[in-house]
Amino acid sequence: MTMQERRLRVLALLGAGLAAAFFGAPARAQQGAPPPAVLVQPAELKPIADQSEFIGRAAAVDKVELRARVKGFLGPRKFKDGDMVKQGQVLFLIEPEPYQAAVDQKVAQRDAAKAALANADVQLFRAEELLRSKTGTQVTYDQRLSEQLQAKAQLEDAGAQLRDAEIQLSYTQIKSPIDGRVGRAAVSPGNIVGPDTGVLATVVSENPIRVLFSITQRELLEARRDTSSTGDGLVVLLRLADGSLYKDKGKLDFIDVTADAKTDGQMVRAVFDNKDGLLTDGQTVRVIVEGEKVPTVVAVPQAAVALDQTGSYLFVVNDKNVAEQRRVKVGVARDGLVAITEGLKAGEKVIVQGQQRVRPGMTVNPSLAPPSASTQKQ
Image (cartoon, rainbow, N blue to C red; front, side, top):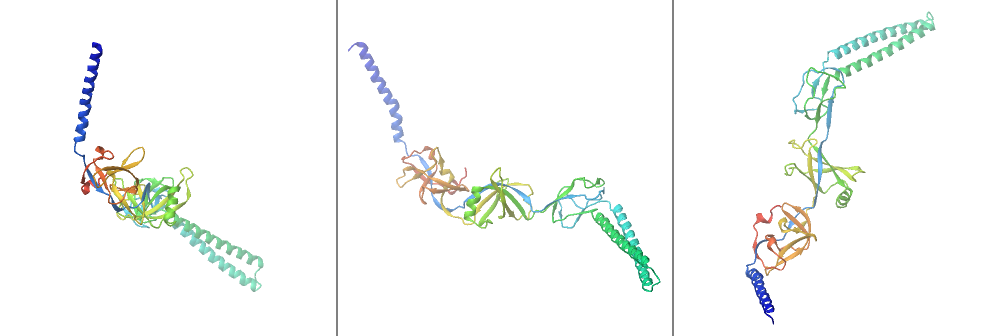
């Protein structure tokens, strides 16, 4: 063996020793490290209702746009913006004097027509008596009869014109046709208004209030299999813009008879009490529909469930404190808990914190998680 070969052999042995020292030390340190500490929580049987969530919009049961039906100067306003008003309450006044004058004129014309008819009746009676006593002619009688019929027609025409004038006069008082809340007045007193002016104000009936939302045909079929066609057996909740739930539950009262050809969705309507006026016409809300009967399912904290390309999984700690990776199927998630529909039994301990340091088959040091940690939301 030459000197060069001996030198290479010594360098190779020295390199192997250094490699063993470099890589072997961490391995020994890892083998000697204590088991990682984790928090565990037993899987529990919990009542969690199956639910679906949709985007909906509140809509008043009744909504009326107040408009002027006659032309004239707008008089004093009879309400304040946002007031609650009653059906038949006068909200706007249009100057009534010209229309009252028209009514008075039509009354005079009607009275004149009544007098003319009374005179025609007298003349017809006299002509009839003369004809009966053979001192009058048939021609005279026919003429008086024609005059009497014309006077009767003129009286009817005068009465119709009077009714029309009274209707026009009534339009000078713009009343609320419903009970509800009146919005902002669009026209100030003193302006000339008429049929072409547009909306003067809007009155909406706020209690109860409807919420409209669209569901897919698949969701509708599933709901109809589980409930009646009217939606009996379903509970409807609302989630407001701040994330809170509306205090009152709603009830489905209508499913549209046609589906939207563009979206394949079908409109559904629910009704809610709105005594405090918290819901407003046109407001966007999230609609939660769930079954009235709440099933009991195996539930774990959401923090225990992880997701990879294969699907959902969690770590279960057995009696020997060994972590086992368990593939599961998840269901409804609610209030920090998620339902496990397959792959887990009640009572099994799942890791809810520290699973990032755990590998399948690894021994761990489990501690029972406090209630706050077991229900934390992610």
